[in-house]
Structure formats: structure tokens, C-alpha cells
Length: 176
Image (cartoon, rainbow, N blue to C red; front, side, top):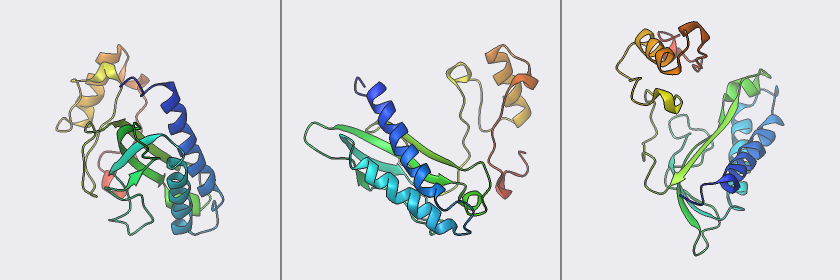
């Protein structure tokens, strides 16, 4: 865990930044596959410059038939003594947004010590992410209203003072 420090935080930022810049070249050009491919290849190239023994455990692309860093792919330098990590990644979330020249696309990456991230198949699943004060207070099986109230209480705020981010997808219509 000692190696998961500022140095690795900066490496993660570099990897995602490079992917975002590569995909931006396709902004407004109507080709979401090319934008996703550019982000993926840039991310893959940057991983090869980092002293990690990384394995992608959560990837993106198989269901969408998009360019991808696939589940089980080995990334990083993989030199003896490199820090072994699990990686969850989506090189470009919002491919249509980039293709249409719209704001809101993101590049995502999570890295944690080997064995600590869920090795998930390529499928859609319900997820909630919140800060540490909400740990143990919000639940997937609770209603949106219940979770907002619980988060507000944990944060000592009113519900109206909480910012919630939900991807604008047909599968999230009911939540939104």
C-alpha cells in the first residue's frame, strides 16, 4: 500500500489525461469508434511507461463491440519488483458526446493493490460511489430518496446541498 502514493496518483492522472487528449482529436467528427480507439491506444501506451504489474479486472468494450482494454489484459512495465495492481478502466465514457462535439465525456481509471478490485465480467451493474462519510449508510437496494436522505445526514447537509451525478442513459431514466 505504501506505493499507492502521490507518485501513482500522478501516473494515473497522466494516463487519463493522455487518453482524453487523444480522444479530443475526434471531437465533433462523428466517429465514436475512432474516438474510443484513440483513447484506448493512448491509455495502453501510457500504461507501458509505468512501473506496475497491472491487470485489467474491469474493462469496457466487449458488450459494445468497441475498442477496449480487455479483462485480463496485462499493462505496465512488469519488471521484477513492480507493484502488482488491479485496474478498472473506461478509456472514454461518452463516445457519442465526443463524436457529436458535446461536453461531458470522461476518461476513467481506478487502480488498487492486486486482489482488491472486483474481477467483474463485462456487464452493466448497479453501482453507487460516495465519499467515506457515507460508508455503510447508502445501499443499492434503498430508494434514491432514502439514499439521498442518508447521505445528507452523514454529510450534515440538506438534501438540496448534495450534488448527484447520474449518467444520462436510457437504463437510468427511472432514477433520473
